[in-house]
Image (cartoon, rainbow, N blue to C red; front, top):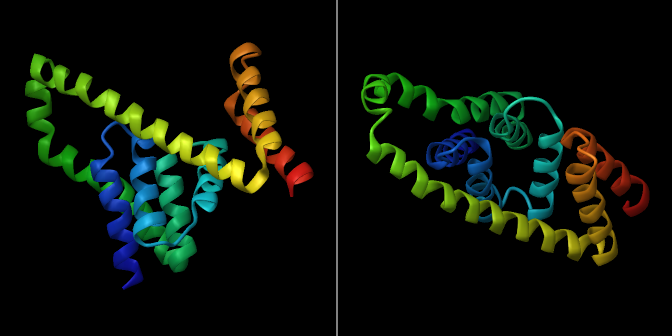
Length: 176
């Protein structure tokens, strides 16, 4: 039964996550944190942070990790397959339609309407992660990490991978 739930959680999040990995993250969080309660918000936010520091698509990394934690190696394969299956199935089934209507004004307008929705979902998820960090690490550590990360990314143009690794080291040494 757990393998079916792993497949379903990852498949649903990835079939509804229009816009790629970042759009999938809040949907995947809903499935594994709120619906199945396999992880806490804190565990999920750590999973996302670590996944962002590793190369490759975030959705498949998260799905593989979730699958492994809940069902071992077979669960990991099922999770990754469920993450890529929606795109694979839709691309095969809709390839002709996509080529025919890719320049349609209606399709372009639909994409413009979906982007703000994805931005709101990412904003809500970021707020939830911030609140969880505040509750578990305290306001000082949360603000220090947020401010240093902002300046490292925006002012000094340091690679996001190095910023995430720096935050992980900061947390390991000073928080815990």
